[in-house]
Length: 394
Image 1: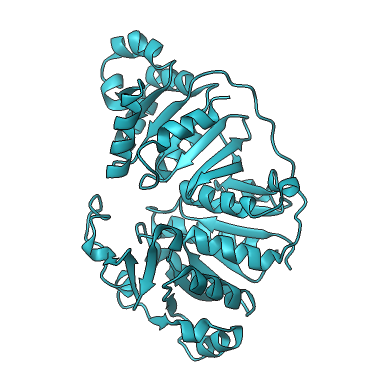
Image 2: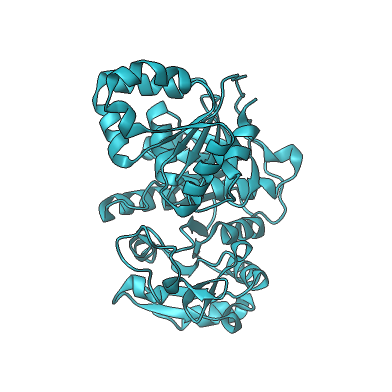
């Protein structure tokens, strides 16, 4: 049993997925309010949540500098170790982002086991490589939007940094895992094979029973690890924030350029939802201040990029327009970086997950009382954005 948990994720969609999974596994009387997603903006902010029973911190470091990652890791572990000698970091199961930098820094704080397996989406680790279905990640098109090809082996991420391959025979029991870890280089990242949901459960169970372990990997592994550490304990809720009765139509903000998101946008349009591109809108102030405002009051989707968001915030006119567009309406946010940028712009400090309606699909309340749905860009079916919008239009 533990005095509570502090876990972390390298982006907001991952933090929301992890928090919703932990909350869903708890009883109805304790679910709402027990798990809080905190948007990390520094030591003082994290200190405000020191008494919340279960925290999942969005470090917002997926593509950050090594210096920024190091500071965020230090803040996370400082708070985490006040409650447990074990910690968990959620990263992308398809190995995107600066995973090596995160895990190398973590090795300075304890033994690090990495397993990105996500059995519920048919993603496994075989012979040290991520496999999607029966296809090695490096042979899929899932990294098509990345600047480089996917790694053939997970160890390729780490270059010359020491790694070791952890197999099922090593983690089948806590004793065998402890003995094997003690024989490895203390700075090595221990990469665990996992070819089934049962093996992921065994890894989580054994890791929970030994010393200062830091697990890193998928949200599914994080949920299992949390359940092991909580050991069925009922956690007193911090108290859910109230939901204001927002009557407006949902605005769907899409920051992902994945094939999945493109198909979901086309489905929305087939159901009568208008779609807009933020960069095109802000290029023409007459459109911005005219008919587009009326169109965007109904359910609509708006595609954004890092560049277009930055341009929008530079001008007081477009900044005010964007703030008015987002105000007092439920939001569907696609892509972790986009979701974080929007919530930062609104001044949101924390979320409390209400429910998960599919893997990685989270509906949450915010401290401002705005209902949001958060979806990783690569997740969901064709009608997922449409369903999420229906769920949050209260």
